[in-house]
Every structure is written in C-alpha cells, then in structure tokens.
Image 1 (cartoon, rainbow, N blue to C red):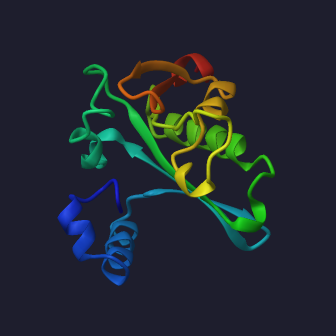
Image 2 (image 1 turned 90 degrees about the vertical axis):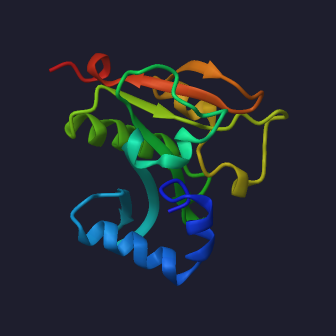
Length: 161
C-alpha cells in the first residue's frame, strides 16, 4: 500500500490497517498485482496497475511522469527468502508484461534501482534491478537520480496482435 496511499495515511495504517486496505482493494475486484506460486504456496508478489493507481509516483520528483502517454507501472516485488537468487525476477517481469498487455496496456513502466557497486542489500531492491529489466526488453527513458532509472517496455512491440 506504500505506493497507493499518501504517506500520512500509510503511516496511520501501518500493520493491520494497511492489510485491511489491501483486502478491501482485492474485495472490490481490483487486482493489485500478481502472486506467484510454488505448488500451492505463494512464494512471490509483484505489484502493478495503471500508473494513476499509485499517487506516490505523481508526487515524486524522481519518478514523475516522463510524458503524457498512458502507462502501467510495476512498482515493487517480494520474493520469499528461500526463493531469492534463483532467477525469479525475470519470470515475474515477463508475467507482469503479459498481464498488463492482457489488461489493455501498451506501455509498462518500472522504477528499478541500479546499484553503484554491483550488489546491494536485498531490502533496498524491492523495485527490482535495472539490469533485470533491461534483459527483459525494458529501455531507460529518463533518469533523474544516479541510481534510479525510469524504464519502459512497449508491449505492442513485444506482443503484436
């Protein structure tokens, strides 16, 4: 809910309040993202939706809109500790691209990090790594911070109808 709520509202709802807000979102019929399973157990999560569903992006000077084109945004990932460093991120990005395209999106945007010296603590890579997005067909379209590119994938080119 970090990306979906104003900071004060997110802070007030920490813990159970934000869990309930996410449940209400799901109960409303809106899919807030994708779950990834290993057998019957959820092992990873990817949050994506049309950019306007993430008001925090609009208020960010680093992640502000690049242009007026409608985009979907993939804003964060979570992978169970036991599944990390096993190649899940590219599969999750591919699934996000396919899902966004199936929902009518033509552009998918991401806000990954680019570590200065190769590796970084996993806790800071929750938006994904720029190198993973590049390998999955995303191109940098803006950079307003040394370590945070804005990257896009043209879904119409990747998935011609």
